[in-house]
Length: 285
Image (tube, rainbow, N blue to C red):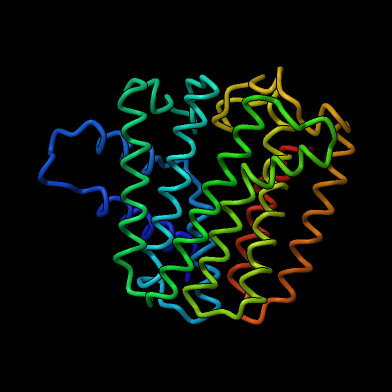
């Protein structure tokens, strides 16, 4: 299915899920829509899930609730990150706490967490599949919290390997969960689910490397305020730009290697990963 059609379906599902006629004046719902329906969002995580599920012959309409839950998990993590980093911009627009205040932003974070859990519970998959997805999402949330803790406290980051581990937790965990949950919806074998998860973690490290590399040259084009990482430990500081390019190339090669081990049809997934790689790699040039 065409990528733009998938994006349209995801946005439609996000919008429908956030409709609540019983609370027409809710600032929390308004803020949830503001963050979730931002047109600058690449919707990369739910697209990865849908593309993976497609490879196991899962109809897109059936996988959409899980993909939407994954995007809500991503959005709520952005809200928390912006509060912690005191960042006033996100995706080229005012961050949630900047626009609505910290109290509403915190409530929006809590609300999206509950909505994501509800979507998983009400999906049409078997009890075993839903349990597996829930367990994976909970484990992912813990990983993201641990990674963010290391970033905030700047602790256990004295070697490149430890910084990479933080990247795996902060960025890689949710991307890994997106791919793995796509496999779970299609009753993929455990080997495939594990490889999809590892593939996503490697994609997340590659993503975070680029994110850090263009921190100083960030602009309205990227939607990220510049020089946010001046006081933080990053791979760029530890091994230099050439060093991070080498690490990124290793992670990209690992993604390709794992992709070739998947038993499902990976055509759509490969196309999405390659497109994303082309769009992001320009920031290392």
